[in-house]
Amino acid sequence: MKLENTKAQMRKGVLELCILSIIAEKEAYPSDIIGKLKEAELIVVEGTLYPLLTRLKNAGLLHYNWKESRSGPPRKYYHLTDEGQSFLGELQNTWETLVNAVGQTTKNIKS
Image (tube, rainbow, N blue to C red):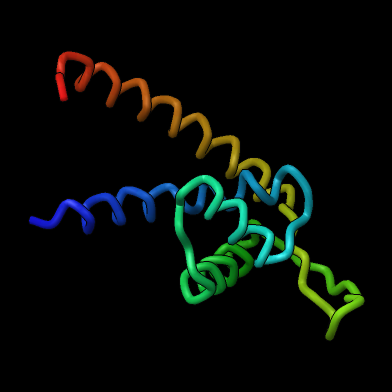
């Protein structure tokens, strides 16, 4: 089993939570989202992000507005819907429970 594959799967598992959390702070353009994820070492490429944004939009969790750009064509800026806000709250609760459970089961492991 490859460690890098497992680490990548763990990061992918939390992407929805991270993306929704970034957008909850303020509406976001996809390259801004990618930048924040890269800063947090949750490396994501456009080919991963755009399908996920589309899925979240189709699920009614996100909406977007077109805004003019000074350096090219108009850009899509995403924001959470009311349903998205509620969904994010539930994800955050689930995440906190999971972190607690993992912490309890791994606290005696020494590296």
